Length: 325
Image 1 (cartoon, rainbow, N blue to C red):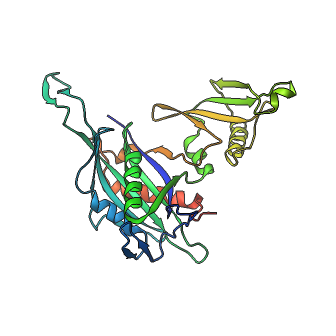
Image 2: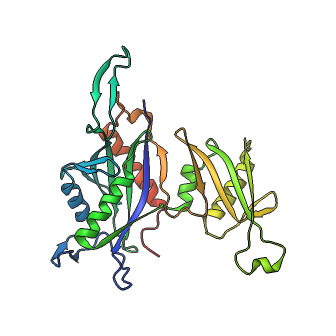
Image 3: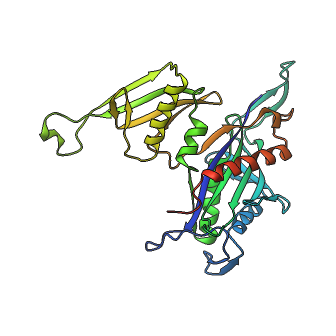
């Protein structure tokens, strides 16, 4: 049976570029938007465009190029509020099609159903869209997506792609997704129990100055695995990893050698993932959902999932910068 996990990232919305206009919208403020057809629409806040997206996609959408389907199940009760944020959630049904197969009984091995290439193998997933509340000191510009996954299956890419198309076509708005914070990403994704290898890269230029008029050439790659760390050594390594992640040009020092680039290979839910520590900006956090939330059919108990995601959102928002610097 597949394990459940979550994928989390921040988002912000800006006016689609027009002669250099890159205005970032405040999430909770009333605003009037000019739609693509020239008409104007006044919104209480930007949560309304997400609700419109959910409503528009209540009927099935098929991408015949990627052979993937998408449908939202949403109603006005799909909402909760805390002292820190508002959360809108929807159930998304998505699946793939394009090839035939036999569905067999796992016990008897007899064919129960012959799946046609036009049949869509759909699964349900939950998406939470979180709007942090403004405070006296902060007018919020960044929100939070939390996607629920089933094993290797998820809906982040197809959902954000369709959202971008909808927001751009209807409201001339661009959706941008980023990591929540580099430090939180490292704390959640890179752990002593799942790190497999360090891949350290040192850029080397030719000793002949004439070769270095351009970019030079060559690099040295060093890989280290099969780690054993005591608590003190692990703490030192994580401090260095956090330093690298804090700036694109920060160097990684290992055994008194400075490396220009660091990649970390980790195991996330049985899948190997290589993470470039110098490029965390667009990466999402992936972490397991507790087993007790999973029901006998392999899907999450909604009330328990909402409680867990509320805790996760509260924790993430403590680490997240809520405005664009």
